[in-house]
Image (cartoon, rainbow, N blue to C red; front, side, top):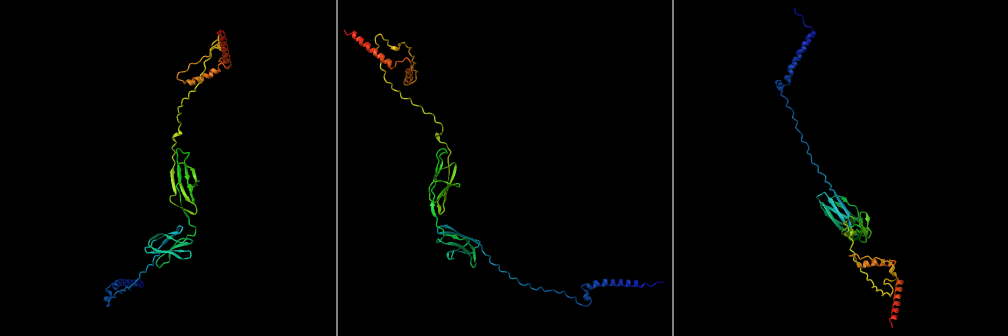
Length: 324
């Protein structure tokens, strides 16, 4: 005998059947043909027409401001040196004006300009570079022509005294008004200045002067010694001239009874040295005379007087005896 199912079981079974039916019908409803089976046309997918994007007009680029440089420097008494450069290919205009704004020189250039401009003295000048339709692109520093004009001078070349050796080496600085000659940082005095080795002399203009021509000279002094600095051999001495001796008078004949040798006959004779061969006779005589004068037994003036008196007395006596 069957028993009826409890109410809760029946509800669960009904719910399960309902869920199964939904599971079957839901895919059919979502399929493309589901609407046709129901007698309804499928809704066509809505296509959104793309709206045309607004046209973008390219912006006009702003003109690039060209760059420029300009300089104005005094180059002479009444002229200035103008230099200007730019990276623009378009022509630019330069103007030179004095301190009152009066334009004294103008011109155009492309790329660069380098000119010497003759101007009136007594003013300050400024250069300005401008472009077409633009303001000033560059302005120079003022160049003053108010100062007195410098005097142009030419520096003479210095002299270089370079005899043998190094004792007399010197740089001779000329005397030029408005010019100083320097070696390194030392100002040379006019005239000779001692130097040695390699020397570079530079001429420098004093205030109020400007140099023209060469201004620097270099010289290397030689250190070769002089040829006569070595010991020279002694020169051979010439023979001294022979002194002329006065002739010696022969002694008078001795008186009778008197020895020919005179009162000094008893004294030993002084030995005389024989002359040495090869020596000068004058040297031998000059050496023998002092020896004779220094001898003790040599006849002096008194002895010669006595000898002459005795000889005269003997001669008179002999004449008296032989008279008759």
